[in-house]
View: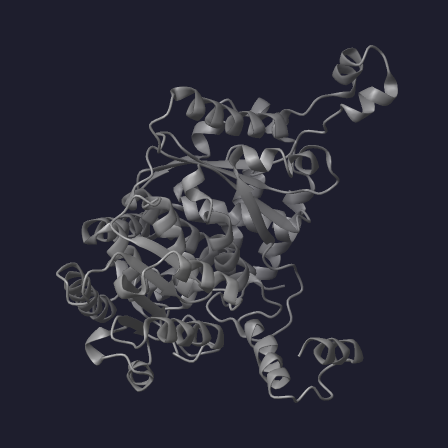
Length: 508
């Protein structure tokens, strides 16, 4: 048996005998301190997960058997870590972490982005009041999260991020903007993405030309052929994947909306988390501990989903951002060598916002039959000027939910509350022992948000190492695109089943 197989079997054995959360706390008075981490201005608490000392030691051995140290070094050195596309993954270099050549190239590209921001600010595009950002996937989710979280409609420009090919989305944004005072930012790595280019063409027709267009792409010649002036084209490296790209020129809309100082603070926050991830021991490393819990629940304890709840309205776009980051990265069926996995890959990521989610999905989380590890993301300082009661209630609810999920309510307690009615008591019984983790930001600002996003990137990478998969390709996205093109070309042949052909005949 290989070292990796033996380590995997050891985790499985430790997971089979893992105690309840209550027992884990009862056996270790210092558990909360031991499984809490301070990193880059963020506080992480993993104590309400099933990381027993035995499980944690087994996962640490699995990490070593998976050559994590070498994989992490390869990531930051600029070596090939995306074997199916023979590429490095240099998103960390965009925030100043990693190999010298990649960092230098990123700094040069960032200087070009800064110059363009300055040109917009000094009137090179005329008087700009609105920004229309057009992209899809990572070309939209990251910028949308940044602007929504840090601008909140109070910033320098009225900013709209459009991704959906459904014309309703673009039409609504255009109704809110004056075409004579709108800057359009088109983001597409290849500058051929169908949804993005269709929306861009409609925006060009609306404005009456491409003079107030900026392109962000790894194919500048295509942007020039499309009609965008070369001085308005920003590039980024092929080795920066879309879902990791907000640190690059893809973030130009955020830099415009928030200001360059804020954008640099975002990068600095990401850089601080990079330093923590590179240097902290495994037992004190926030992304590593989080990845360990992810793999424990998904691969060994049968949890098919993981839920993230942002107890701050400014982070309402965090769950959809994480859906792409985690599921497009680690939703794979083969390992790095192309062999079929013999274990589950990443869990399905989903979530919601604060107390809204409590009144929608928490019934299932407390009393349903599914095991769902939960993550609570909280911000200590409110982002509004209303009375303190708003934020106190919000945070009290977040902490109480985690406590209630762990504690539950026994049948005897429920019976006492139900006046001896056994049927009612059964409905009021909570099994408890349901895991959660907590992430606390003292304040939500560009630095802490940058650190938070970099944490999730490194967590995703570490989970991929443990699972033995490549987190940097996304071939599963392509088949549906190919068949959509065939359908539009009228080629709904043998690849389409009878039901799909009938639907195409009805709809197209």
